[in-house]
Image 1 (cartoon, rainbow, N blue to C red):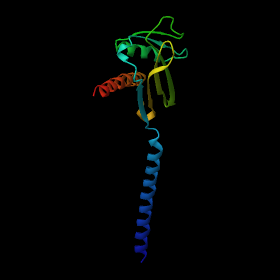
Image 2 (spheres, one colour; image 1 turned 45 degrees about the horizontal axis):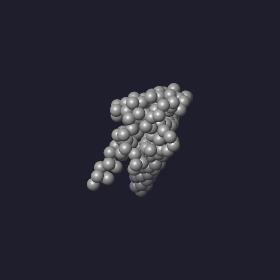
Image 3 (cartoon, one colour; image 1 turned 180 degrees about the horizontal axis):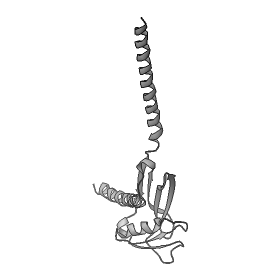
Image 4 (tube, rainbow, N blue to C red; image 1 turned 90 degrees about the vertical axis):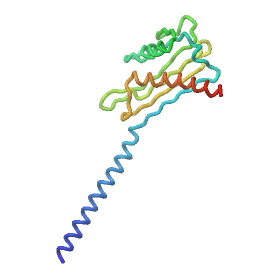
Length: 167
């Protein structure tokens, strides 16, 4: 009789251990799911033809120690745009003023959490196109990859809009 009770207790404790492990895994998965967020969006005003924007001015953030603004300018140059940069408002007329907001986060290392880039009209400061990207720790991208994603999505969104309009 005692050996049957010992088997029953042993089986019960094994089941209890499995329950505890499964509960731990479930809670861990739930908590870590928030660390794996990634979101990228882009909108372009229907009246804007990005191909017609040949000159832009990237307005630098004075506290930008990572060179984000200069790297955005470099990426725009690969699109055939003549780009100037500076922390002050542009002195000469350009087709668009480019503004950006970068947000950094510390998780063992410092990384870019979010980037938002806007193309604005020179005279009115109205947003013509906007793109943003958010990548949390588990899906983090390098600064270069974030810039490529945002600028790429803005230009791709404009191309998709043209294709939809043509059909």
